[in-house]
Image (cartoon, rainbow, N blue to C red; front, side, top):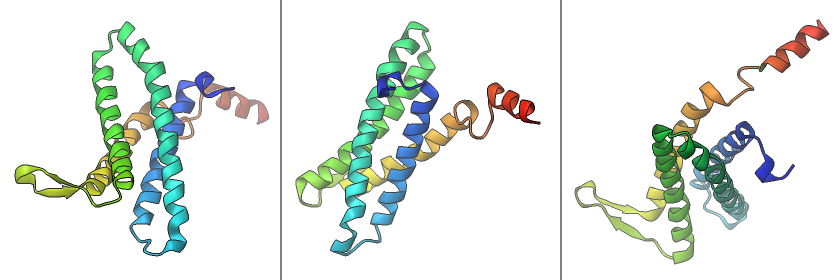
Length: 155
C-alpha cells in the first residue's frame, strides 16, 4: 500500500510520530556541542523532510473533503496547523541554508533568532496534535470494535 492509499487514521498517527520525534531530536540537539553529535541533526533533517511530505499528503486528502462538506471550522484549524508546520519547517531551513544566525525584530516583543521561532513553532505542534488525536484517531488508546470482537473470540 503506497502513501496515497494510507488510511486517514494511519496518516494522523504518522504525523504525530514524526512531530514527536522532531520535538525530541530538536530538544536533544540543544545539548549537542560536538561534531560527534552531527548524526542527531541529520536525523532531525530527515524527519523534517518526512513531515513536509506527510503534511502535503494530509492536505491533499483532507482539504477537498472538508470543503465539499462545508466544514469551515475544520478548514480553519487545518490552515492554522499547516501554517505553524510551514513556519517551523521554513525556520529550520532558513537557519541551515543561511549559514549564519538570522534575527527577526518583533517590535515590542523583542528580537528573536529564526532558530528560536523555529523551535517555538515546532513545539506548538505537539499539543495541537495531541488534542486532535486523542479523541478521534489514536486507536491504540481506544480499541476498535474488530479488536474487541477478536478478543471475545479468544476468551
